[in-house]
Length: 414
Image (cartoon, rainbow, N blue to C red; front, side):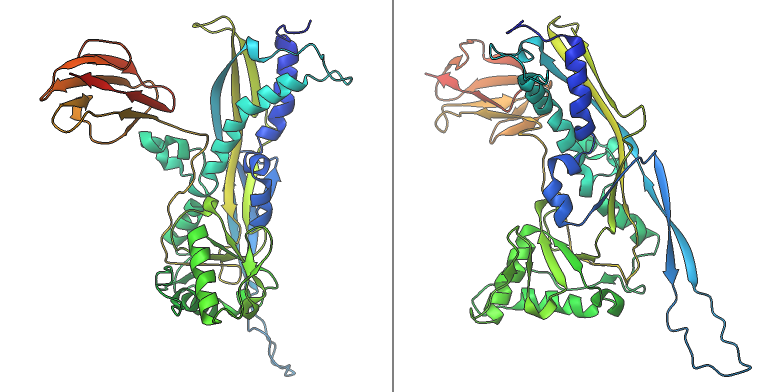
């Protein structure tokens, strides 16, 4: 019946249908990014998938001399694992959200409004998986502030592991030292582009000969290099933008520069070939699922979605013929959702009239707190006397529970 809860059976069917897309994480919420970065998405990964890469030896061919056989080792095999980890969350909705209007359902029997609501609720899960794509690190689970970036090891952690193992190094030719790539200081400053070209010149010849190379960088670094290029050409020539933010320059037509916030903020450059970065999802494991429950201890009308899936990343081939990085810096630039912490804002009175302490610390600027943190706000008299809070409470000390995006309090002194 219209305007009534569609029922647990119908909602479970919807959730399972939507879940097959949500589980793909970045491939679902950021397909354009996956395409731009030429990341290979693999399904069916069950906790660990190992691919063997043949590291070939070159320069082994000689002129043939009868009676002098030329026998060489072709190279060595290297196992490249993709480690997948199980992640999960519980998201709460309400039966009031899962009703169909008087217009009814589609002719196919679908529930369009409930499907849209379910997708909106579950989308945060996919966004959280996406945030870990480059900056996930399993060890972050030990740090409360970083647990949201501990779902699986992201690409930067994979690279760091190979650096620690000596697979990426100056000696191996895939770790290139360079100057900082900073914004041009004048209309004649070309140093950012000069540095970029210097790095390109240090790439392994086999990598430079690849028909398609992708240079990952932060958006600001991409702007710095592009602006410096314009300076170098005195405005007579600019970079060739591809329409999606990617760009090329005539000097390196086989290199597509891909600036994105997903890569981070900083001046690190990474050069790689297509599908060398891989994201795997165990879409077939029975632990990858979404379950729906009606009712909770707080409210019998609550709808609880338990979502869980298994995923991970891999840098397939770190050798200099397929990959190189600079010694630049990089830091996370993304946040999933609209907010993650409560930001407490206090409207302070004129100087000297009074002050406020939040959890015992003098308030001077907005303060962030994790959800459900107990907040104690205390108004202290100055040249004027405390009267009440903007909430209507008249006690100088009030206690609140942190929840929501912003919590604004104004102490009134007279």
